[in-house]
Amino acid sequence: MDIFAKYYDKFVGADYDLIVDFIDKKIKQYKNNSELICDLGCGTGCITSRLAKLGYDMIGVDANENMLMQAREKLSLLGLDSVLLLNQNITEFELYGTVDVIYSTLDTLNYIIYKRELRRLFYLVKNYLNYGGLFIFDINSEYKFKSTLNDGKFIYDFDDIFCCWQSDYEQKSGKCFHELTYFEKHKDGGFERFDSFQEQRFYSNEYIKAVSREHSFDILEVCDNYTSKAVTKHTERITYVMKINK
Image (cartoon, rainbow, N blue to C red; front, side, top):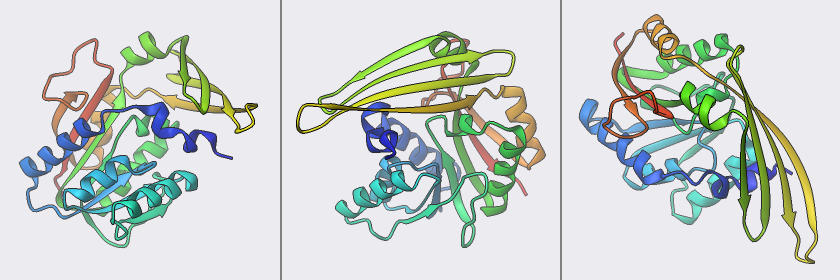
């Protein structure tokens, strides 16, 4: 059982409306004729479904089949069965044609551990974007890895699930290791334990800029989270808005 996918929406607790509003505003600001949008690492479809409700034609890509099953159920309940969901690794994704906007949220790119795979993702994004298309994504800052996630311990306690999440950041390698222990409550009052492991990598602003230039992207904005504020030394999530120039 993929216990993380099952309870993902409870654990994340993101401000999805803030993210959706930001993406919608940037599309209208920089590419107002956009119709087809691809969500890389769409998870359970929380952002995909909100943008679909705004009228965008959506494609969701995720390597986790269980996440996509929940996304499909969510979309069906909203009457959004036309949204295409693809069970693919985002560093190897294949679309049926080009799109106007590609985005990836909630530090999905930090889960790409190898630099060659991040460069591969940029290559694919360039390949599947229409001329002038937008690439919007966020990454965790080094400040977050050092201050929040290094030796970080987080507890999630809900009626049906208890989770202990421990993170450790290795500055030399730029890698962050997450160990999660879950206790799922059964109807008879008993608990079943599950364990999982996740790994992320820090990417510097300099490296992101270099990869962007290599793949013909112009950086339009670098923001603090999904706001209009500039990045500071205490920014935890950095959001990039890029435009393909070839």
